[in-house]
Length: 317
Image (tube, rainbow, N blue to C red; front, top):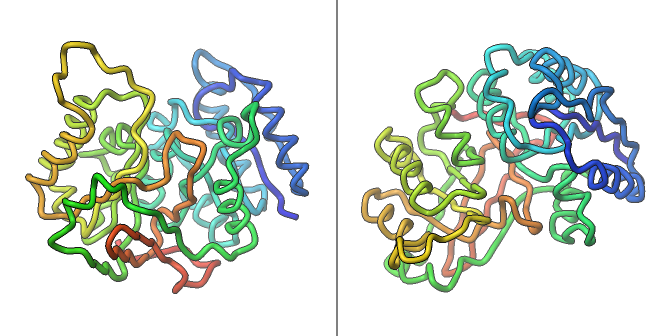
């Protein structure tokens, strides 16, 4: 049984039913669930004003929980970055609390990595992943369970068949001891030029986004390219980019596939697709800031971090 602390650091919870279902499911799995006093607060689009949400983050850090899990993402953390309790968060992580989330939570994760080197986990949110009307995804649940019992050592996936020709010249690749970092593309781009983007060299960068049309994704990826971020990595992993509406008659063959092809022509850094992460039910958990190995052989890809103690945060950036 694990102690899970639920808090809302970004947008207000609008789907209360999903929130309740998520809490019930975690309890049914045998966990002790503690809900932050302001988890369901609302102020404009936020889960309480800035001071309220900063206090909630502080309580999550002080909770002593095994996992501090966000209720949802949305928007709200970038405006808090100058005032986050970095020392308290890093201390909580040192003591064993795993901070888990995705989407807007990328802002806190990358700022914390930049400021302290502490590892957080890119993974599920309460409502979207534990609270849907259908049963939660089995792979997500298994990965979450591995995190809780300390057995999480890596994640593997199969590269899409359409991607195979791009890597035919180098069918095998082994990246050793690289810092794994990344998250939501839009949020990460919003940190370029600020002190809150980690200066990772020789890392493995993973990216996902939701509701962004391919031309917008290309514009943001181009920003990372022109800022030198992509060329500084040993590999880039693209997760899910979904829930956007194509514009009939406009794109004429321009798509996520052509974006990826164009990007590959502009950087020597290998770009792999199909990472099971993003705003999709099937998502793995990824340690942001941990030193990892990446092995790609044919269409089989594996990120492995099992060579570091479970209770120490990563380094190497």
